Length: 199
Image 1 (cartoon, rainbow, N blue to C red):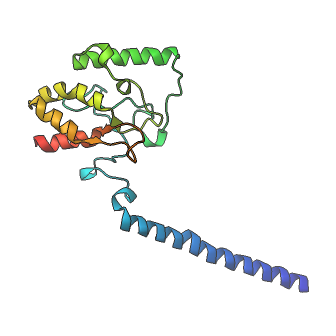
Image 2 (image 1 turned 45 degrees about the vertical axis):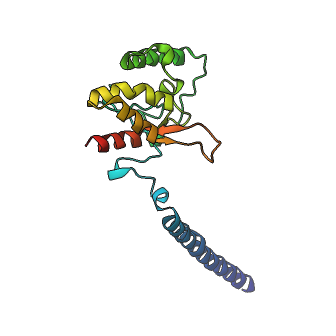
Image 3 (image 1 turned 180 degrees about the vertical axis):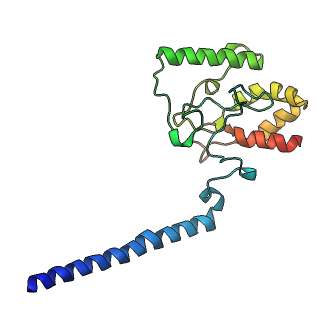
């Protein structure tokens, strides 16, 4: 009988402890962390949304038509290996090595297509224009790739080339912490700024 009471008491203590800790750690902690995020960093805590809910500044986008052809009036992103392109549920690279025949062929094909679209030689096409990032979701391109696209975008929109060039220069993001990575440009933010400037 004593053993049964001890077991019941122990089970009761365990259940009460579980309920209290669930409330404190599962509910209370979550509310505190969410509240701090909303108070100190609301834009980041809500997914870093672009203007008019046109996506997130943290995930790249494709600027193509229904057939997958590049829209000439927009700056183009780097290729994506995530699902059908910039699919947040399928993040990841192609995992193909630098000597893989399929990767080499696709890079050569992309180089030729971009060189033709931009009216430059294949050797002028930057590496990020033809290779996907490790996550397949990178929203950034190099400054070199953005500047390569300036003449086409300006011509398609009927804007002075210098105006589009200045817009690109104004959208350059510096290195993280001032020394990590490279300077870069967020393509979706650049295209939104371009639409706003033109409109």
